[in-house]
Image: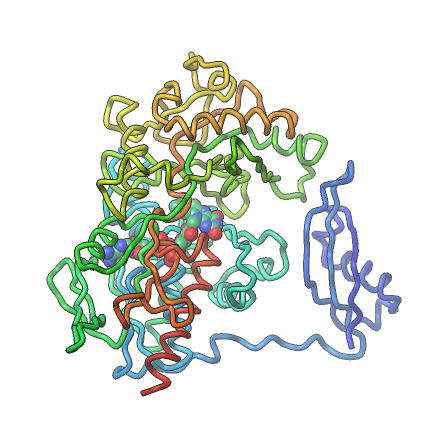
Amino acid sequence: MPKRIELLLSPSQAVSPATVRHHAALEAGIVLDDVTSVRLIRRSIDARARMPGVRIQADVYAGEEAPVTSLVLDNLKHANSKKRVIIVGAGPAGYFAALELLEHGITPIVIDRGKDVRARRRDLRAIQQDGIVDPHSNYCFGEGGAGTYSDGKLYTRSHKRGSIEKVLQLLVEHGATTDILIDTHPHIGSNKLWVVVQKMRETILQFGGEVHFESYVTDMVLTSDAQKNRSAKGVVLSDGREILADAVILATGHSARDVFFMCERNNIAVESKPFALGVRIEHSQELIDSIQYHHAPRHPDLPASSYKLVCQADGRGVFSFCMCPGGLIVPSATSAGEIVVNGMSMSRRDSPFANSGTVVAVEPQDWQDYASAGNLAAMEYQASVERAAFASNGDGSQRSPAQRLVDYLGGHVSSSIPKTSYIPGHASIDMRSILPPNIDARLRIAIREFGRSMRGYLTNDAVMVGVESRTSSPVRIPRDHETKEHINVSRLFPCGEGAGYAGGIVSAALDGQNVAQSIIAKIFSAA
Ligand SMILES: Cc1cc2nc3c(=O)[nH]c(=O)nc-3n(C[C@H](O)[C@H](O)[C@H](O)COP(=O)(O)OP(=O)(O)OC[C@H]3O[C@@H](n4cnc5c(N)ncnc54)[C@H](O)[C@@H]3O)c2cc1C
């Protein structure tokens, strides 16, 4: 039996495997030469002390080797072409659903409106440099989904929703570093994530699945029985092709507004749901490090530090969202005529900037004015703020509205905006002119509160950039809790973030796996 131990090491000790082994043997009371292996279980930064350290939990083996973990990929079977499931969307929900189906030899047919993960990069450059938004290939659409050119944070609160270990293990089996299996805040980074996504596609193809790009679903093929019960038979693509299958998974993400309209047109129930709305706030990473690590400069073996802020403002939650240490603010619009921002980072998290969404919980009373949009009122409210952000720069570019935090609180338009990580540039405006009053008032309260709780946060160089509006889907596509099937169309399975059942890469992947298991139980076990 291994001995479970805990260590608190300095950052430079923690990066040396030999030093970790030495201290692990000491802690376990085993002579170093007798140690056969040390398996790390958990690793986290402890920044509470004046000199931050690294906490490690490990199993120390003596006289036996640590057991070898079996590969999830070894469970995949070649697909049976007579058992077919259409998966609309090649994001984490779609690809993890596909791999889960392949464990049971069922053919996944993945369709994505965007381009493959490598070709997609050209379109990201066009948004960054020329302000041209391709409505099918951008930071949200294309292979790997919204998660690919992101920060690649892999933590979730969805611990009860499935096996996070299996999700992380599959990412490792497709090329991600094994560090993600032990870090409390695992992270991949955009420069590495795209390779993982590409390898996942290669696995799907190798086992007989299909992956189709640059053609999008415009309609559903539905049938009705004598009792008018409807069932999904397949999908219609933008090039007119009809594809039929035993079931359809709709995993199209939070930005596919055309899919929500398509559901409405077909009387496939959808409903508005709460989300969160606000801005992205950027500081220098050096400042955040000096606040979080109590001294500057940061130790070279410590990662760029992050923060998490939350408070109640006038009865609603305001919180930091998708904090990107050492990251960039990116233009995440999916159509011309709107400005949306989000954050991403590379695996080394080495940009000089730290940014984070700072958002207010949106509630039904906020979208009352959009009641004429019926079930899609929350989405129309969200779109109206994005259009206002676009109109604010006056030149039709992706220059985002921006204001120094202190000017925002003081009610002045900033005379200059300091250098930020957002490549398209900024228009200096009063952010109050584009933020809905309910959001603006609460952001002011929260930013003052955050300035009090995190000394240094409220500096003249901190900038707010708008708008952070795609925090989660403003629409839910309701489904049965057990079977995961749509409430009024059988064999249709709403899935992932767009349908309202996930809020990040890992939770979307878990939902993809869960939906695939439900399909296997409902459709293929009975057959
Ligand atoms: C810039 C950015 C940074 C982010 N950073 C992180 C992070 O660090 N950590 C984290 O956990 N989450 C992050 N997120 C959120 C995360 O990416 C999403 O939660 C996750 O990708 C949702 O997965 P999904 O599979 O449900 O949908 P998506 O990833 O949105 O995938 C949906 C797919 O469906 C396709 N599609 C849409 N409509 C159609 C159609 N009609 N026909 C065919 N295909 C269609 C799209 O092209 C897309 O590829 C970030 C998001 C962005 C935009």
